[in-house]
Length: 352
Image (cartoon, rainbow, N blue to C red):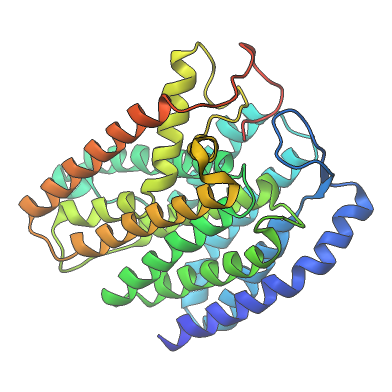
């Protein structure tokens, strides 16, 4: 618990303080997000906020961990550094978004696999080489999917950082309950970094995290989901808990994917204001109301993950069915909500 609190406060203050020089640097080198038809801001906003969160997490982790534990965290930090660098290159316009999605994110998943971090679903159910191969494939799919979901979640002031903070809070809580010091400390560091960044990013935002920050947070969320172990819970509960914690970004990505596919658009290549937050805002909640409503939904998903830790297989099965029903109904209802329709064309820029 002590290392977790230490990591949280180090990352919190480091993130808040580092935003100031990072913002000045972004303005100096012209790393700004310009206003446009699919943007909600009307003046150029500095990017590179993710750099402050990245540095805060790295400093917090290195100061909180001692001895052999640092070796365990090395692979995670290497993967996180890689995705952050890819995202920053994309922010700079030096990479096509398909390189980010089909090369950068899978390579980051490969780094985790080489570090010995992987899903443990099929290896327990099937055993043998077949189970290991399927788990490796599931790991790659999970890392790419969650990283991409956070990448496209960064479309409203305070949304991506706030959701990441909420998810980190419940990862830290569940890891603490199950005696996982490494996961607790890493989650606490991310919680501190994301919360500190919100000081500058909540509406009206003075800086954006950029794709470098969004991908960095998404990668760490995926990693925490893979590292979380619930020793006294059922097998179903063990893999269901991370899905519930990350239920909000999974839901938003599902909504966007289904909605855009039904309109003949490529989900991750056709930008538009058709995310859950946009639709809730158009229903009358406004910008801040929509963001706060999604924070609440994220908290509900995290609370369900804590509950599933104590359920039997039957109870976890019922909760899984309930979660699927909620996602289905949410997609059906929100798809009918008003949004700004985008043109039927593939953009050269990633969706937001």
